[in-house]
Amino acid sequence: MLECVVNVSEGRRPEVVAALAGAAGDDLLDVHTDPDHNRSVLTLVGEDAPRAVARAAVECLDLREHDGVHPRLGVVDVVPFVPLDDGTMADARTARDNFAAWLAGELGVPSFAYGPERTLPEVRRRAFRDLAPDAGPPVPHPTAGAAAVGCRPVLVAWNVWLTEPDVALARRVAAAVRGPHLRALGLPVAGGAQVSMNLVSPDVVGPAEAWDRVAALAPVDRAELVGLVPGSVLARIDPVHWDRLDLAEERTIDHRLAARRRRLTPPSHES
Image (tube, rainbow, N blue to C red):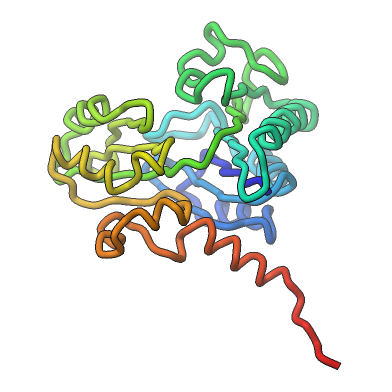
């Protein structure tokens, strides 16, 4: 099984986000929307739903009209494929390459691969500068831009707000906590300051450890989980801290997959 966490550049028009989520059908596990980032994160299952969401996004979004505090390459900004259960990284890489070829061939949108070749931050730094697209035309699509299409293990996207609305402090904190297991940006959001993080090795540095690292440098007001968290990561954390860290059993990948299986399993009828 493959998970796909599609990041689209729209987070301010609920009706548009609902239409994009609706394109995924029964393969949608979760939607997280942020108006400051002007971004929505759709957690999906399989390879069909990401294509349906991408097609809908390219049809209805225009990068030229977009603004938000989060960096972006395109309206379908990031498309990582993630192996779950019996899925393998080889499966995820094949799905990544197939999606990139489809995106170029069907929608004319170029894409940059990330995974074993390079990281997502490297794509953001180098795209259309000294790095050409891996699929599609050599220049951005006029309204859709480009996409970063990847294969990776499970990660946790997780943010904290600092008590003080000091964006310069948030950026210093982000630089200080950044490392091989944690990526971080300091961003201005809703009159406050946020340290936005990707916990790329969440079984090593999870939300509890990330909170402690940030809190050692600046007072933390609150936390936010973006998308879903693996059950194994939640199990490492004392339940007394779940609420403070914006975590819950029903927000695990495992819980949502089980709910999806129940929805898709027809009821049995005894004769």
